Image (tube, rainbow, N blue to C red; front, side, top):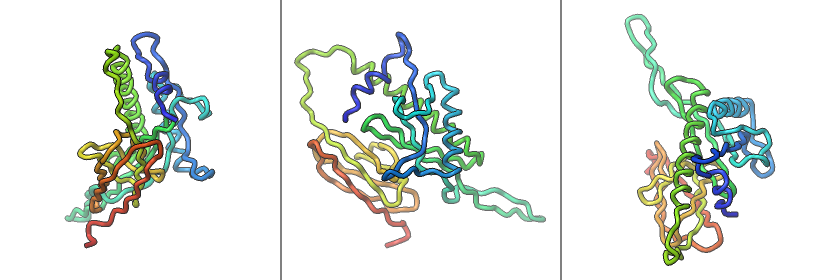
Length: 238
């Protein structure tokens, strides 16, 4: 279903009767199975703690009672993102330092948006949770502003007949940045990245560090969701 009614509720202007948004933070469910382990449970608790510091959000424990659902997809260690100098006698050995990351998906009705927290400076999972909570807050504020602007009266003659289409981009490996033309739209997760865009021809690019980018041009539109699978190859391959 479309998310306009949901947006009208949770993105209401905060100038009168500020609306506190209910948000559920939990594990990702795939094909009826809950993808969870101790690390994901710890990150769920970290994100809940960070969101409770913001008066805009009220964290709930039941997904059915939430207006926003933030699902933790996975957490782990990325590739070497720097080095730590370790003195050994008169020498300094630089040991590669791996970043920590937490991947989440924000879900509102049929809309999905990936948020990733990555930390290689402080080496704390809590820092990843702090980044995600901040990004969700920024997303909410931006959409509230957009909703407030779009609510302004418009002349009856300016009725839009533009149709839109829905595209779900799946990448192997996941974690690729997806661009529509030159516009960065988000990062793919195991569930892909769902994009709603004007009907017609569009060029999609998938980019990820260490891999060659992939570009595809296709047509979207109509009532059916278009699925676009993309495979990225390591940049060392020819």
